[in-house]
Image (cartoon, rainbow, N blue to C red; front, side, top):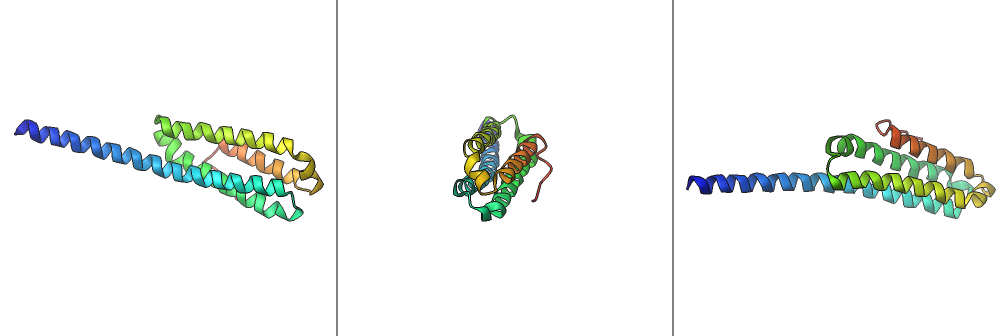
Length: 139
């Protein structure tokens, strides 16, 4: 009976650990999804390349930076050894790198509509946020 009790206790502790890790990962993935949604908004604004898109670009940039900051402060620091959490971090770095290439590809239309400098400034802010993610940039 004592062995059964210990086995049940171990089983419960392992399940609690598993559920806590799963919850942490799910919360991180929620923030990552917010980052991706803001990134898509940023891309859509750049593709439309309308002169009145500046505020939307800034808003999308702020949302991405806030998501990066929250991920860094709440997950990357504390749970960086977790492979899924580490994968999210690497994915964000790749997504920002892809944005740089995207902006370079469409710099002509962006320049025509007066958005090139704003898009490049947003990209610099995003790059800075990956280096110092704890500082939120609200612009």
